[in-house]
Amino acid sequence: MQRGLDRPGESHVLEAYEAAGGYRAIRKALGMSPEAIIEEVKKSGLRGRGGAGFPTGTKWSFIPRDSDKPRYLLCNSDESEPGTFKDRWLLENDPHLVLEGMMVAAVAIGSHLMFNYFRGEFTYPLARWRAAVEEAYRKGYLGKGIFGSDYDLELVTHYGAGAYIAGEETGMLESLEGKKAFPRNKPPFPAVEGLFRSPTLINNTETLATVPWIVENGADSYVQYGTEKSRGTKLWSCSGPIGRPGVYELEMGYDLMEFLEGDLGGMMEGVELKGIIPGGSSVPVLTPEECRGAKLDYEGLRERGSLVGSGGFIVIGDNMSAVDCLLNLAHFYAHESCGQCTPCREGCGWIEQLVQKILDGRGTQADLETILRVSDLMAGKTICALADAMAWPAVAFIKKYPQEFAALCAEPVDMNELTAAVGRHDHILPRAS
Ligand SMILES: Cc1cc2nc3c(=O)[nH]c(=O)nc-3n(C[C@H](O)[C@H](O)[C@H](O)COP(=O)(O)O)c2cc1C
Ligand code: SF4
Image (cartoon, rainbow, N blue to C red; front, side, top):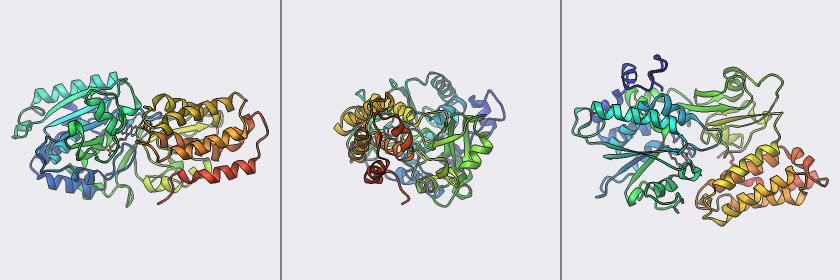
Protein backbone atom coordinates (compact mmCIF):
# COMPACT_ATOMS: atom_id res chain seq x y z
CA MET A 1 0.00 0.00 0.00
CA GLN A 2 2.94 2.39 0.56
CA ARG A 3 4.34 4.42 -2.27
CA GLY A 4 7.56 6.22 -3.10
CA LEU A 5 9.60 3.88 -0.91
CA ASP A 6 11.92 3.14 -3.83
CA ARG A 7 13.28 6.65 -3.22
CA PRO A 8 14.47 6.35 0.37
CA GLY A 9 14.38 9.61 2.27
CA GLU A 10 12.00 11.18 -0.27
CA SER A 11 8.85 9.11 0.09
CA HIS A 12 7.13 12.04 1.81
CA VAL A 13 7.70 14.36 -1.15
CA LEU A 14 4.93 14.86 -3.71
CA GLU A 15 7.21 14.27 -6.71
CA ALA A 16 8.38 10.88 -5.38
CA TYR A 17 4.81 9.94 -4.49
CA GLU A 18 3.54 10.75 -7.98
CA ALA A 19 6.50 9.04 -9.66
CA ALA A 20 5.39 5.88 -7.84
CA GLY A 21 1.82 6.19 -9.13
CA GLY A 22 0.41 8.48 -6.47
CA TYR A 23 -2.71 10.60 -7.04
CA ARG A 24 -4.05 8.23 -9.68
CA ALA A 25 -6.84 7.01 -7.39
CA ILE A 26 -8.28 10.48 -6.75
CA ARG A 27 -8.18 11.29 -10.47
CA LYS A 28 -10.09 8.06 -11.08
CA ALA A 29 -12.52 8.78 -8.22
CA LEU A 30 -13.33 12.24 -9.61
CA GLY A 31 -14.62 10.47 -12.74
CA MET A 32 -16.77 8.02 -10.74
CA SER A 33 -20.15 8.51 -9.08
CA PRO A 34 -20.03 8.76 -5.26
CA GLU A 35 -22.17 5.61 -5.06
CA ALA A 36 -19.68 3.69 -7.22
CA ILE A 37 -16.74 4.70 -4.98
CA ILE A 38 -18.63 3.65 -1.86
CA GLU A 39 -19.65 0.38 -3.50
CA GLU A 40 -16.01 -0.37 -4.35
CA VAL A 41 -14.89 0.25 -0.76
CA LYS A 42 -17.79 -1.88 0.53
CA LYS A 43 -16.85 -4.70 -1.82
CA SER A 44 -13.22 -4.55 -0.68
CA GLY A 45 -14.30 -5.60 2.82
CA LEU A 46 -12.01 -2.94 4.33
CA ARG A 47 -12.61 -2.58 8.07
CA GLY A 48 -11.65 0.41 10.20
CA ARG A 49 -8.09 0.27 11.49
CA GLY A 50 -8.76 2.64 14.41
CA GLY A 51 -9.69 -0.16 16.79
CA ALA A 52 -13.25 -1.33 16.34
CA GLY A 53 -12.92 -2.88 12.86
CA PHE A 54 -16.22 -1.44 11.61
CA PRO A 55 -16.79 -1.97 7.82
CA THR A 56 -15.53 1.21 6.15
CA GLY A 57 -17.80 1.29 3.07
CA THR A 58 -20.87 0.73 5.24
CA LYS A 59 -19.87 3.67 7.44
CA TRP A 60 -19.47 5.87 4.36
CA SER A 61 -22.95 4.89 3.19
CA PHE A 62 -24.46 6.17 6.48
CA ILE A 63 -23.62 9.78 5.56
CA PRO A 64 -26.95 11.26 4.43
CA ARG A 65 -26.86 12.81 0.98
CA ASP A 66 -30.15 14.68 1.30
CA SER A 67 -29.10 16.84 4.28
CA ASP A 68 -28.95 20.60 3.70
CA LYS A 69 -26.02 20.80 6.13
CA PRO A 70 -22.39 20.59 5.04
CA ARG A 71 -20.74 17.17 5.24
CA TYR A 72 -17.31 16.86 6.84
CA LEU A 73 -14.51 14.35 6.63
CA LEU A 74 -12.32 13.90 9.70
CA CYS A 75 -9.10 11.90 9.74
CA ASN A 76 -8.25 10.55 13.19
CA SER A 77 -4.48 11.00 13.63
CA ASP A 78 -4.58 11.21 17.42
CA GLU A 79 -2.82 7.84 17.85
CA SER A 80 -2.09 7.81 21.57
CA GLU A 81 -2.62 4.15 22.42
CA PRO A 82 0.48 2.80 24.19
CA GLY A 83 2.48 0.54 21.88
CA THR A 84 0.89 1.98 18.73
CA PHE A 85 2.92 3.99 16.23
CA LYS A 86 1.78 2.96 12.76
CA ASP A 87 -0.20 6.13 11.93
CA ARG A 88 2.82 8.20 12.94
CA TRP A 89 4.89 6.14 10.49
CA LEU A 90 2.40 6.81 7.69
CA LEU A 91 2.21 10.54 8.39
CA GLU A 92 6.00 10.85 8.46
CA ASN A 93 6.83 8.67 5.48
CA ASP A 94 3.74 8.67 3.27
CA PRO A 95 1.70 11.81 4.04
CA HIS A 96 0.46 12.09 0.45
CA LEU A 97 -1.01 8.59 0.69
CA VAL A 98 -3.06 9.66 3.72
CA LEU A 99 -4.03 12.89 1.96
CA GLU A 100 -5.11 11.06 -1.19
CA GLY A 101 -7.21 8.65 0.89
CA MET A 102 -8.87 11.62 2.56
CA MET A 103 -9.59 13.20 -0.82
CA VAL A 104 -11.22 10.03 -2.16
CA ALA A 105 -13.35 9.68 0.98
CA ALA A 106 -14.39 13.34 0.79
CA VAL A 107 -15.46 13.00 -2.84
CA ALA A 108 -17.37 9.79 -2.00
CA ILE A 109 -19.48 11.50 0.67
CA GLY A 110 -19.71 14.88 -1.07
CA SER A 111 -17.62 16.76 1.50
CA HIS A 112 -15.82 19.98 0.61
CA LEU A 113 -14.07 20.49 3.95
CA MET A 114 -11.73 17.95 5.54
CA PHE A 115 -9.93 17.94 8.89
CA ASN A 116 -6.90 16.02 10.06
CA TYR A 117 -6.67 15.91 13.86
CA PHE A 118 -3.14 15.27 15.12
CA ARG A 119 -1.96 14.06 18.46
CA GLY A 120 -0.39 17.03 20.27
CA GLU A 121 3.03 15.39 20.60
CA PHE A 122 3.31 14.63 16.86
CA THR A 123 5.56 17.56 15.99
CA TYR A 124 7.71 15.78 13.40
CA PRO A 125 4.81 14.04 11.60
CA LEU A 126 2.96 17.34 11.71
CA ALA A 127 5.83 19.16 10.00
CA ARG A 128 5.95 16.51 7.26
CA TRP A 129 2.17 16.70 6.91
CA ARG A 130 2.07 20.48 6.66
CA ALA A 131 4.77 20.41 3.95
CA ALA A 132 2.77 17.81 1.99
CA VAL A 133 -0.43 19.85 2.27
CA GLU A 134 1.40 22.95 1.04
CA GLU A 135 2.72 21.01 -1.95
CA ALA A 136 -0.80 19.80 -2.74
CA TYR A 137 -2.26 23.32 -2.54
CA ARG A 138 0.52 24.68 -4.78
CA LYS A 139 -0.18 22.00 -7.42
CA GLY A 140 -3.92 22.64 -7.37
CA TYR A 141 -4.63 19.26 -5.75
CA LEU A 142 -6.40 21.06 -2.91
CA GLY A 143 -8.47 24.24 -3.06
CA LYS A 144 -10.76 25.38 -5.86
CA GLY A 145 -11.38 22.86 -8.66
CA ILE A 146 -8.97 20.12 -7.58
CA PHE A 147 -7.06 18.32 -10.35
CA GLY A 148 -8.70 20.59 -12.93
CA SER A 149 -12.19 19.37 -12.00
CA ASP A 150 -15.06 21.49 -10.71
CA TYR A 151 -14.74 19.94 -7.21
CA ASP A 152 -13.63 22.32 -4.44
CA LEU A 153 -11.87 20.75 -1.46
CA GLU A 154 -10.28 22.50 1.51
CA LEU A 155 -8.32 21.07 4.41
CA VAL A 156 -7.79 22.13 8.00
CA THR A 157 -5.00 20.60 10.09
CA HIS A 158 -5.67 20.63 13.81
CA TYR A 159 -3.48 19.39 16.58
CA GLY A 160 -4.64 18.48 20.06
CA ALA A 161 -3.07 18.93 23.46
CA GLY A 162 -1.94 15.33 23.94
CA ALA A 163 -5.09 13.80 25.46
CA TYR A 164 -5.70 10.11 24.68
CA ILE A 165 -9.45 10.64 24.99
CA ALA A 166 -9.42 13.10 22.06
CA GLY A 167 -8.83 9.98 19.89
CA GLU A 168 -12.33 8.74 20.76
CA GLU A 169 -14.31 10.03 17.82
CA THR A 170 -16.91 12.09 19.66
CA GLY A 171 -14.31 13.45 22.08
CA MET A 172 -12.45 14.55 18.97
CA LEU A 173 -15.55 16.37 17.68
CA GLU A 174 -15.87 18.24 20.98
CA SER A 175 -12.20 19.17 20.88
CA LEU A 176 -12.46 20.40 17.27
CA GLU A 177 -15.40 22.56 18.34
CA GLY A 178 -13.11 24.18 20.91
CA LYS A 179 -14.29 22.33 24.01
CA LYS A 180 -12.77 19.71 26.32
CA ALA A 181 -12.61 16.31 24.60
CA PHE A 182 -15.49 14.77 26.56
CA PRO A 183 -16.99 11.87 24.55
CA ARG A 184 -20.67 12.24 23.65
CA ASN A 185 -23.46 9.80 24.34
CA LYS A 186 -24.44 7.89 21.20
CA PRO A 187 -26.79 7.92 19.32
CA PRO A 188 -26.79 10.18 17.43
CA PHE A 189 -23.69 8.88 15.69
CA PRO A 190 -21.29 11.30 13.99
CA ALA A 191 -22.34 10.15 10.51
CA VAL A 192 -25.72 11.78 11.19
CA GLU A 193 -24.85 14.46 13.75
CA GLY A 194 -21.13 15.09 14.07
CA LEU A 195 -19.02 18.22 13.84
CA PHE A 196 -21.16 21.31 14.48
CA ARG A 197 -24.14 18.93 14.34
CA SER A 198 -23.48 18.16 10.69
CA PRO A 199 -22.92 14.72 9.11
CA THR A 200 -19.29 13.77 9.69
CA LEU A 201 -17.30 10.79 8.47
CA ILE A 202 -14.52 9.86 10.90
CA ASN A 203 -11.89 7.37 9.86
CA ASN A 204 -8.52 6.33 11.17
CA THR A 205 -5.35 7.44 9.32
CA GLU A 206 -4.43 3.90 8.23
CA THR A 207 -7.99 3.17 7.08
CA LEU A 208 -7.88 6.21 4.79
CA ALA A 209 -4.35 5.39 3.59
CA THR A 210 -5.65 2.00 2.40
CA VAL A 211 -8.35 3.54 0.21
CA PRO A 212 -6.24 4.79 -2.77
CA TRP A 213 -4.95 1.26 -3.50
CA ILE A 214 -8.48 -0.13 -3.43
CA VAL A 215 -9.92 2.54 -5.73
CA GLU A 216 -7.01 2.36 -8.16
CA ASN A 217 -6.75 -1.43 -8.36
CA GLY A 218 -10.35 -2.36 -7.65
CA ALA A 219 -11.97 -4.25 -4.79
CA ASP A 220 -11.53 -7.56 -6.64
CA SER A 221 -7.76 -7.17 -6.40
CA TYR A 222 -7.89 -6.19 -2.71
CA VAL A 223 -9.99 -9.19 -1.67
CA GLN A 224 -7.28 -11.51 -2.96
CA TYR A 225 -5.32 -10.59 0.18
CA GLY A 226 -6.24 -11.71 3.67
CA THR A 227 -9.06 -13.97 4.78
CA GLU A 228 -12.74 -14.15 3.96
CA LYS A 229 -13.79 -11.87 6.83
CA SER A 230 -10.55 -9.92 7.34
CA ARG A 231 -9.58 -8.63 3.92
CA GLY A 232 -6.36 -7.05 2.76
CA THR A 233 -3.32 -6.05 4.74
CA LYS A 234 -2.74 -4.30 8.06
CA LEU A 235 0.07 -2.38 9.73
CA TRP A 236 1.48 -3.66 13.03
CA SER A 237 3.74 -1.54 15.22
CA CYS A 238 5.97 -3.95 17.10
CA SER A 239 7.90 -3.29 20.30
CA GLY A 240 9.48 -5.17 23.21
CA PRO A 241 12.55 -7.39 23.64
CA ILE A 242 12.61 -8.59 20.01
CA GLY A 243 15.26 -8.64 17.31
CA ARG A 244 13.70 -6.22 14.84
CA PRO A 245 11.07 -3.89 16.31
CA GLY A 246 9.29 -1.53 13.89
CA VAL A 247 6.22 -1.11 11.69
CA TYR A 248 5.29 -4.07 9.45
CA GLU A 249 2.60 -4.48 6.81
CA LEU A 250 1.19 -8.01 6.89
CA GLU A 251 -1.49 -9.82 4.99
CA MET A 252 -4.44 -10.47 7.31
CA GLY A 253 -4.35 -14.02 8.65
CA TYR A 254 -0.54 -14.13 9.02
CA ASP A 255 0.64 -16.64 11.62
CA LEU A 256 1.53 -14.85 14.85
CA MET A 257 4.47 -17.05 15.86
CA GLU A 258 5.90 -17.07 12.34
CA PHE A 259 5.81 -13.29 12.53
CA LEU A 260 7.53 -13.20 15.91
CA GLU A 261 10.16 -15.83 15.23
CA GLY A 262 10.80 -14.93 11.58
CA ASP A 263 10.13 -11.31 10.55
CA LEU A 264 10.69 -9.85 14.02
CA GLY A 265 13.90 -11.80 14.57
CA GLY A 266 12.56 -13.65 17.61
CA MET A 267 13.17 -12.77 21.25
CA MET A 268 16.35 -11.00 22.30
CA GLU A 269 19.08 -13.31 23.54
CA GLY A 270 18.46 -14.62 27.02
CA VAL A 271 14.81 -13.49 27.15
CA GLU A 272 11.89 -15.91 26.93
CA LEU A 273 8.40 -14.99 25.75
CA LYS A 274 6.00 -14.26 28.61
CA GLY A 275 3.09 -12.90 26.56
CA ILE A 276 1.96 -10.65 23.74
CA ILE A 277 -0.56 -7.83 23.76
CA PRO A 278 -1.39 -7.99 20.05
CA GLY A 279 -3.55 -4.89 19.46
CA GLY A 280 -2.37 -2.01 21.63
CA SER A 281 -2.61 -1.58 25.39
CA SER A 282 -6.42 -1.84 25.46
CA VAL A 283 -6.71 -5.49 24.46
CA PRO A 284 -6.21 -8.64 26.55
CA VAL A 285 -2.73 -10.15 26.76
CA LEU A 286 -2.12 -13.60 25.24
CA THR A 287 0.08 -16.26 26.87
CA PRO A 288 2.72 -18.11 24.76
CA GLU A 289 0.31 -21.09 24.53
CA GLU A 290 -2.47 -18.83 23.22
CA CYS A 291 -0.04 -17.26 20.73
CA ARG A 292 0.88 -20.58 19.15
CA GLY A 293 -1.24 -21.13 16.05
CA ALA A 294 -2.98 -17.73 16.41
CA LYS A 295 -3.70 -15.81 13.22
CA LEU A 296 -3.28 -12.06 13.00
CA ASP A 297 -6.74 -11.03 11.84
CA TYR A 298 -10.04 -9.96 13.43
CA GLU A 299 -11.48 -13.45 13.85
CA GLY A 300 -8.18 -15.19 14.64
CA LEU A 301 -7.34 -12.95 17.58
CA ARG A 302 -10.91 -12.88 18.88
CA GLU A 303 -10.93 -16.64 18.87
CA ARG A 304 -7.92 -16.50 21.24
CA GLY A 305 -9.69 -13.98 23.49
CA SER A 306 -8.00 -10.82 22.25
CA LEU A 307 -8.46 -8.24 19.47
CA VAL A 308 -6.70 -6.56 16.52
CA GLY A 309 -7.40 -3.20 18.22
CA SER A 310 -4.99 -0.53 17.06
CA GLY A 311 -2.34 -3.02 15.87
CA GLY A 312 0.16 -2.24 18.62
CA PHE A 313 2.02 -5.55 18.93
CA ILE A 314 3.64 -5.44 22.39
CA VAL A 315 5.93 -8.35 23.21
CA ILE A 316 6.52 -9.05 26.90
CA GLY A 317 9.62 -10.93 28.01
CA ASP A 318 10.09 -13.13 31.08
CA ASN A 319 12.32 -10.38 32.50
CA MET A 320 9.23 -8.21 33.02
CA SER A 321 6.72 -8.61 35.83
CA ALA A 322 3.06 -9.05 34.81
CA VAL A 323 2.09 -6.96 37.86
CA ASP A 324 4.38 -4.15 36.72
CA CYS A 325 2.89 -4.32 33.22
CA LEU A 326 -0.64 -3.96 34.60
CA LEU A 327 0.41 -1.10 36.87
CA ASN A 328 1.90 0.70 33.88
CA LEU A 329 -1.40 0.38 31.99
CA ALA A 330 -3.53 1.31 34.99
CA HIS A 331 -1.44 4.41 35.57
CA PHE A 332 -2.05 5.43 31.95
CA TYR A 333 -5.82 4.86 31.98
CA ALA A 334 -6.31 6.49 35.38
CA HIS A 335 -4.48 9.54 34.05
CA GLU A 336 -6.38 9.62 30.74
CA SER A 337 -9.94 8.95 31.96
CA CYS A 338 -11.94 12.12 31.24
CA GLY A 339 -13.94 11.60 34.44
CA GLN A 340 -17.47 11.92 33.06
CA CYS A 341 -18.58 8.39 34.05
CA THR A 342 -18.29 7.23 37.65
CA PRO A 343 -17.31 3.59 36.88
CA CYS A 344 -14.42 4.78 34.74
CA ARG A 345 -13.29 7.78 36.78
CA GLU A 346 -13.31 5.84 40.07
CA GLY A 347 -12.56 2.38 38.64
CA CYS A 348 -9.35 3.25 36.76
CA GLY A 349 -7.93 5.03 39.81
CA TRP A 350 -9.03 2.24 42.12
CA ILE A 351 -7.38 -0.45 39.99
CA GLU A 352 -4.20 1.61 39.79
CA GLN A 353 -4.07 1.99 43.59
CA LEU A 354 -4.73 -1.69 44.24
CA VAL A 355 -2.12 -2.91 41.76
CA GLN A 356 0.37 -0.49 43.30
CA LYS A 357 -0.52 -1.90 46.74
CA ILE A 358 0.14 -5.45 45.49
CA LEU A 359 3.43 -4.42 43.91
CA ASP A 360 4.45 -2.80 47.20
CA GLY A 361 3.88 -6.15 48.96
CA ARG A 362 0.85 -4.93 50.92
CA GLY A 363 -1.89 -6.56 48.81
CA THR A 364 -4.36 -9.27 49.81
CA GLN A 365 -6.65 -11.81 48.17
CA ALA A 366 -9.53 -9.38 48.75
CA ASP A 367 -7.67 -6.71 46.73
CA LEU A 368 -7.28 -9.08 43.78
CA GLU A 369 -10.97 -9.92 43.91
CA THR A 370 -11.85 -6.22 44.15
CA ILE A 371 -9.87 -5.52 40.96
CA LEU A 372 -11.85 -8.25 39.18
CA ARG A 373 -15.20 -7.01 40.54
CA VAL A 374 -14.49 -3.36 39.73
CA SER A 375 -13.43 -4.32 36.18
CA ASP A 376 -16.72 -6.15 35.74
CA LEU A 377 -18.59 -3.04 36.91
CA MET A 378 -16.74 -0.92 34.34
CA ALA A 379 -16.87 -2.92 31.10
CA GLY A 380 -19.70 -1.90 28.76
CA LYS A 381 -21.25 0.48 31.28
CA THR A 382 -19.82 3.85 30.30
CA ILE A 383 -20.09 6.51 27.59
CA CYS A 384 -17.00 5.35 25.73
CA ALA A 385 -14.77 2.29 25.62
CA LEU A 386 -11.91 3.68 27.72
CA ALA A 387 -13.36 1.86 30.73
CA ASP A 388 -13.29 -1.45 28.82
CA ALA A 389 -9.72 -0.67 27.80
CA MET A 390 -8.78 -0.72 31.49
CA ALA A 391 -11.07 -3.59 32.53
CA TRP A 392 -9.97 -6.12 29.86
CA PRO A 393 -6.21 -5.98 30.56
CA ALA A 394 -6.87 -6.05 34.33
CA VAL A 395 -8.93 -9.25 34.21
CA ALA A 396 -6.68 -10.82 31.54
CA PHE A 397 -3.43 -10.21 33.45
CA ILE A 398 -4.81 -11.65 36.71
CA LYS A 399 -6.40 -14.59 34.89
CA LYS A 400 -3.25 -15.48 32.95
CA TYR A 401 -0.51 -14.73 35.49
CA PRO A 402 -2.25 -15.40 38.86
CA GLN A 403 0.91 -16.78 40.50
CA GLU A 404 2.80 -13.55 39.90
CA PHE A 405 0.08 -11.49 41.60
CA ALA A 406 -0.29 -14.01 44.44
CA ALA A 407 3.47 -14.16 45.04
CA LEU A 408 3.58 -10.44 45.80
CA CYS A 409 0.64 -10.41 48.23
CA ALA A 410 1.25 -9.89 51.94
CA GLU A 411 -0.67 -13.06 52.88
CA PRO A 412 -0.98 -16.48 51.18
CA VAL A 413 -3.57 -16.48 48.41
CA ASP A 414 -6.00 -19.38 48.00
CA MET A 415 -5.47 -20.11 44.29
CA ASN A 416 -8.72 -22.10 44.01
CA GLU A 417 -10.68 -19.13 45.32
CA LEU A 418 -8.83 -16.76 43.01
CA THR A 419 -9.57 -19.00 40.02
CA ALA A 420 -13.24 -19.05 41.02
CA ALA A 421 -13.27 -15.24 41.29
CA VAL A 422 -11.71 -14.94 37.82
CA GLY A 423 -14.42 -17.31 36.54
CA ARG A 424 -17.13 -15.00 37.92
CA HIS A 425 -15.78 -11.98 36.03
CA ASP A 426 -13.93 -13.12 32.90
CA HIS A 427 -17.19 -13.03 30.90
CA ILE A 428 -16.25 -9.41 30.11
CA LEU A 429 -13.31 -10.55 27.93
CA PRO A 430 -13.75 -10.70 24.13
CA ARG A 431 -14.77 -14.11 22.81
CA ALA A 432 -15.20 -15.71 19.39
CA SER A 433 -18.55 -14.58 17.98
C1 LIG B 1 -10.46 6.00 24.39
C2 LIG B 1 -10.42 5.83 22.91
C3 LIG B 1 -9.33 6.31 22.18
C4 LIG B 1 -9.30 6.17 20.80
N1 LIG B 1 -8.22 6.64 20.11
C5 LIG B 1 -8.18 6.50 18.76
C6 LIG B 1 -7.06 7.00 18.01
O1 LIG B 1 -6.11 7.55 18.56
N2 LIG B 1 -7.09 6.85 16.67
C7 LIG B 1 -8.15 6.24 16.02
O2 LIG B 1 -8.15 6.14 14.79
N3 LIG B 1 -9.20 5.76 16.70
C8 LIG B 1 -9.24 5.89 18.04
N4 LIG B 1 -10.34 5.43 18.72
C9 LIG B 1 -11.45 4.86 17.94
C10 LIG B 1 -12.33 5.99 17.37
O3 LIG B 1 -13.31 6.33 18.33
C11 LIG B 1 -13.04 5.58 16.07
O4 LIG B 1 -13.66 4.35 16.27
C12 LIG B 1 -12.11 5.47 14.87
O5 LIG B 1 -11.38 6.64 14.66
C13 LIG B 1 -12.96 5.18 13.63
O6 LIG B 1 -12.15 5.00 12.51
P1 LIG B 1 -12.14 3.64 11.69
O7 LIG B 1 -13.57 3.27 11.40
O8 LIG B 1 -11.37 3.96 10.45
O9 LIG B 1 -11.46 2.62 12.55
C14 LIG B 1 -10.38 5.54 20.12
C15 LIG B 1 -11.47 5.05 20.86
C16 LIG B 1 -11.48 5.18 22.24
C17 LIG B 1 -12.63 4.64 23.00
S1 SF4 C 1 -15.62 5.92 29.87
FE1 SF4 C 1 -14.09 7.14 30.91
S2 SF4 C 1 -13.04 8.27 29.32
FE2 SF4 C 1 -14.96 7.49 28.41
S3 SF4 C 1 -16.44 9.14 28.71
FE3 SF4 C 1 -16.61 7.83 30.51
S4 SF4 C 1 -15.18 8.71 32.02
FE4 SF4 C 1 -14.68 9.59 30.03
